[in-house]
Length: 105
Image 1 (tube, one colour):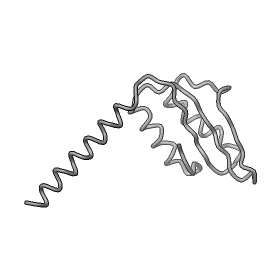
Image 2 (spheres, rainbow, N blue to C red; image 1 turned 180 degrees about the vertical axis):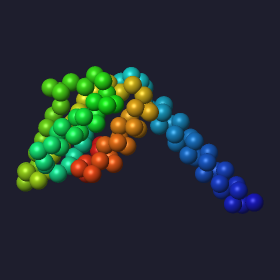
Image 3 (cartoon, rainbow, N blue to C red; image 1 turned 90 degrees about the horizontal axis):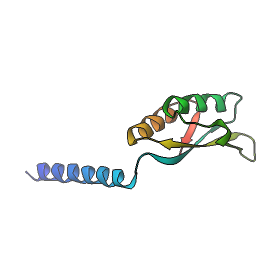
Image 4 (spheres, helix red, strand yellow; image 1 turned 90 degrees about the vertical axis):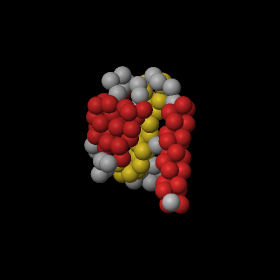
């Protein structure tokens, strides 16, 4: 019986957390995503292609590119208009699962 009560409490907490998160985001809205990975000749192209699949208003000239002081890593900051939480989740998921991407913020 106590286990069932704990399970119910955890489910309610997760539901509340999800609702609170959704309340913080209003769509559509301007959003930026930062993607980091090892510096390579095709990192920019790979990341931009993935983002373009999810964000149709992407402006290539607005993307900020920064190389680490050692030259080993590269980060791209990409501004776009987010249309939904589903869009953001799909974009984060695809970027973070790519083998060349080390981190997505």
